[in-house]
Image (spheres, rainbow, N blue to C red):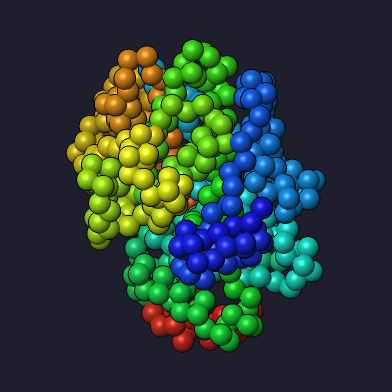
Length: 436
Ligand SMILES: *Cc1c(COP(=O)(O)O)cnc(C)c1O
């Protein structure tokens, strides 16, 4: 399968190049040249398949031409080494719990898949070490670091702003050691991002270090996120085929990679009736749906902070998928937005009524289904992170303790091994040249 850029200046790019580059040379996002439609027979028996089995079929459709069958199967099985259960909340609302992976958030799926695919390409080329550089404001660093942990031939450098990520987030990438180096920059997230971008543009570093990015716009991070939409549908079908026939999926959205993967699943034939994009106060997408005009603006801070995005990068993919037709987008996707007060109220209401503990992101998704389902429809919202990742916020809202899962506790017992660094690109460059 070949890939083209959403800016349409670049076409015919092989998967390997799209993965290593991340972003196309014309600054657009890579899209597969076609979206394979799976046979009706696959959907007829989908409820008899395991998560791995159905994910192998989906992966084969996208990556089968570019990755040997055995290797691809191994990558899929290894990526999905944890469950993604569908949990009934009440009436016609279900939660798809995407937080049972190593860092307790859905980004584990894409990060694990990408790291294994990259390692496969490195082995195939007989290449020496590749270095992955990533800047994080918290969650991306942990998913990427853990996705790549122990993967041979790859070293990861995570740049993060000193004192500006939560202690839970920090211990998820700064205590790992091995092939993961956490670099604590005396600056802000924007400084970290600027230094990473400068590193990619530096010819000496590019040449000596074989740098690559693990940005969330990478096709190898976003396409595998379609796997769990199939698994959600299959689990619902097992419970009730009547409910599965009227399925609405609600996605708490920031950069819209997760929702875009759902749209791809639907194009592959998955019978989802429609999608709802749930936002916090950063609602440029909702405004686009209402007005037809897309006006990016600076993000505002909310308690669902992984969705604090003012210019969602995957918007370009959605536009491309629908040939830029506002009407066609509105026919498939509706929107909702919630203030911090409304998110807090949703967390309390759901806990009181059902005993189910939401995190602030999933709470937007849950509430959008409560508000937006029509009679006869069944809704699944994606529960994108474990509430313990936002423990202080959630405990403040509910007054009830949030138990911390053992694997999160294990991170918190590790020793921080960060490398302190000045807020200066030349310092980063010197460090990387010495370390590698
Ligand atoms: C990244 C993230 C989101 C937003 O996902 P996008 O694919 O960027 O829309 C939502 N919730 C949590 C917990 C996240 O970490």
